[in-house]
Image (cartoon, rainbow, N blue to C red; front, side):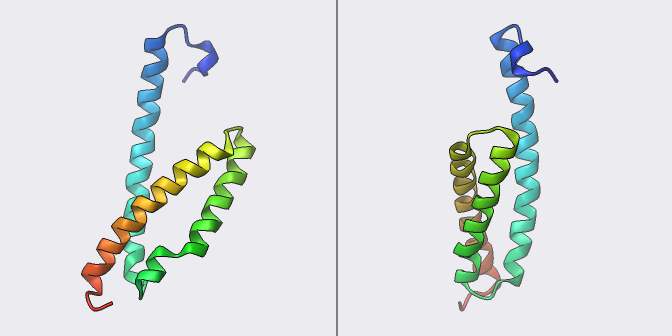
Length: 101
């Protein structure tokens, strides 16, 4: 894959972005599988929400983003949105496993 600086047209850039998006969605699907399985190990909805875990993950993401040269604000905002969606899905999954919580 070319670096962005070597692309010679907007179409070429968009093609690379589309390929990256596909890879990202595949990874999100993989992450979702683990999130749904994690719901089995959580006893309460607070365990599903896990605010301390959310903060640890976003902290790691910010550090990693600095290592690889991406804006930490973008990485954190992206992860917070993704984690929020996963928490909602995890809560729904947890409710089917523990309806009396």
